[in-house]
Figure 1 (cartoon, rainbow, N blue to C red):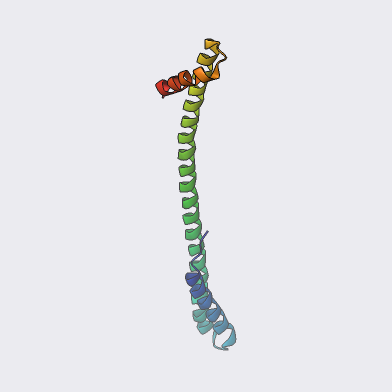
Figure 2: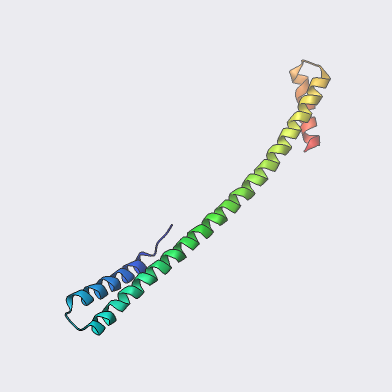
Length: 116
């Protein structure tokens, strides 16, 4: 998951300055609340940004999962077709009954070329 460090840095700085200003200055309560308010807003902004980053990350994972399922589906079909062709070849070879491999190579190539 990729976090936007610039955004979090700005929010962290605003939060730190706001809270520090509210604690250090010995002003009245209203001024303290006004100084701390941007810090609270920065925290809320950071949480919102985290939720957005998490949603973006989950979306990317979903896209990758779909691409993987598509690739596996295509590979599975190709594997099934190759296995079926192999079975056809084996059945024809076993039905032929010959043991001469040199002469059977040409017939095997012909069987494979016809079925694909």
